[in-house]
Structure formats: C-alpha cells, structure tokens
Length: 213
Image (tube, rainbow, N blue to C red; front, top):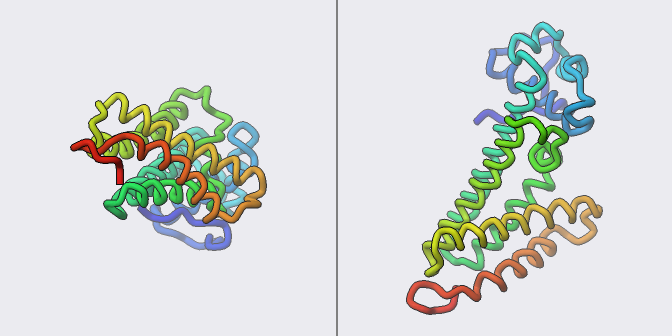
C-alpha cells in the first residue's frame, strides 16, 4: 500500500502519476477531515490544501463521501494489519497481549490523528461508514479470538466475547490516555493496560488444563 502523503511532503504545481496524485489528495483530505470533521469539511478546503483545482479533485473522487470512505478503508486496514503483526510477533501469550496493546496505542498516538476518522467519526449515521467501523472492530477481535480459541478450551463464541473485551479495552484506554494529554509515558500506559488484560486472560486454562503462559 502506498503511504498517504502529508502536506509537508506534497509537491505543488507538479504533474504527478495518477496513483501519486490520488495519494496526495487523500493526504490533504485526511488533514481536513481530522481537523474539521466530515460535515464541516468542504471539497474547496481539500483542493486548496492539496494545491490543486476542484476539477482535478473531482477527477479522482466524485464526492466528499467517496474521499472519506477511501480514507476509512486505508486506516481500518492499517489497524487490522498492525494487530495481526502484533499477534504474530511472538508465541508467548503475555507478550502477545503487550504487543497488541502497544499496537493500539501506536495507532491512536500517530501524529496524523487518523484514528479519529475510524473511532470518532461524525458520520456514523451513514451506513457505509458504520459498516466499515463495525467491520474493523469485528476483524481485529476475530484475530485475537483465534489465538484465545487455539490456546484454551473456550468455544468460539466465548473466545470472541473475550477478544472484543480486550480490543475495546485497548482502544478506549488509548483514546482516553491521549485525550488526557498523554501525561503518563506511553510505554508505562501500555504496560498498565496490558497487565490489566493479561491478569484476566491468564485465568482461562490452556488445552490440557495448564494456566496460560
């Protein structure tokens, strides 16, 4: 996936390949949507931020909603990939919980603020947006639930319930931590939240009746 360019990296007055121009426009739209929210943002603002004319913007995206959905797809996929990488980074379950928690905090603390498009959208009344937000919640929890189900005797439904709890805890606490000014060092906040999750999860026995390791 090609990275979305931020304003500082965006060349102006330069003829770009279509894919590069698309990423440039997405970068401008992301900045405007994060700063203003969907409803207050205007295509004029996005075109101006990108340094292009509105006709150029409309050549790539037929409307504001299409721009927003393209960004949602990008950042939902990024979170799912981050959680997958965290779970694959180790075979030790305690370390998996730590890595998963860290992935959420990294996602939320990114300077781009793009997590707001996913978790703090002002457009959840739009079905296409709501579906994507629900899907990223389901997809991340499914990744975690598979690990829980593989390592315990819990059925699929119970594993998924625990996984939603773990992911929800990570996401909500990370956002709260940021909203409070990140006064606790990030690594310490990650350690505290992962410890809370692990203390609950380790009470469920592994296959064979041993406690989780």
